[in-house]
Amino acid sequence: MRILATLMLVAMAAIFFAADRFDEHYLWAGFVRAFAEAAMVGGLADWFAVTALFRHPLGLPIPHTAIIPRNKDRIGDTLASFLRDNFLTPSVVARRMRTVDVAGALGRFLANPAPEGRLKEGGSRLLAQFLESLDKERLGGMVTGAVSSRLKTLEVSPLMGRSLDAAITEERHVPILDSIVTWAGRTLDANEDLIREMIHKRAGWIMRLAGLDEKLADAIVDGLRRLTIDMAVDPHHPLRSKAEEALANLAWDMQHDPEMRLKVEGWKAEILGNKAVGAWVGEMWENTRAALLRAARDPDRALAGKFGETLKQIGASLQDDPRLKGAINQFARRAAVGAVATYGSGIVTLVSETVRGWDAKTVTLRLEGAVGRDLQYIRINGTLVGGLVGLAIHTIEVLS
Image (cartoon, rainbow, N blue to C red):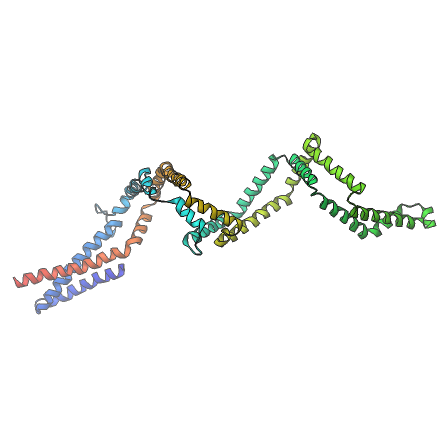
């Protein structure tokens, strides 16, 4: 548009000089000359006016030019004052919030969420973008550190003791004992050759010479196998009772024995100091973050299942309970007014200081880029309107 406006000005100059040569010989040339001459004046005047807004014309320090760069600080202050007086005052926000039914809108959305909607999709997209914007390594370190710090300050021994005690009372330890017995039997079967070799090496030469080492190995292996089978089929086996008694004593010691509690805390510290545990916590957070991202990208999942039913019940209460609705709306109004009262001046200062922080060139380029085409239309219109005015004046002069 700047090139077009400049070419029009050049064209008017060429037409003016061409018509000036024929002005004495042809009547029509005078009208063309008057139009082109006035068009040049109008185009040059509007070029000067448009240029003077943003810079010095031709680089000359003419007074009252480069208006916007010279007054950018005042522009920022004026814009900030406009925001403060018309948007960021507690009275304006309170008056506006009186007509906003936050609780009703939230209740309708939760009770009957639309299959498709900007609110659901926008909230889902916002949550997904927020999660994606977080620094994974830094956030993972923060999560790992927070979990480790919490575990370090938490005395786990009494908690583990009470959990074990409750498991024994409710007989939830029985499957664990069964698994241990089954594992012992499978381990015995898998390592029978190793046991026989150990007995053979430790038997004296007299026993090996008499072949008693093999009989001893058979007796030991068979005895262990019968023991595991008996423990598996007999819930009241003496060894199972001893194991249960040992578990009960362990549960009591972890709750009440200072020495045992110190041992557990020492084991906990060693576990937390292991790099593999830190990596596991970090991986757990990444899996959680990935699951949150998947749910955020699919807004329907957030409102499904029991959690979705709970949200619907809350939504119905928000619509049907006037006291609850009034309390939430009042809270929303107070929160909005309080936020404006607390942070409104900060926002205004931010706007003002941001504009002040821009250099003059940045302000010029941003404003000129925003309204540049319309500014060039001013030059084009000035050229055409100036030419028409010049033509009218010349016509009146000829007719008079």
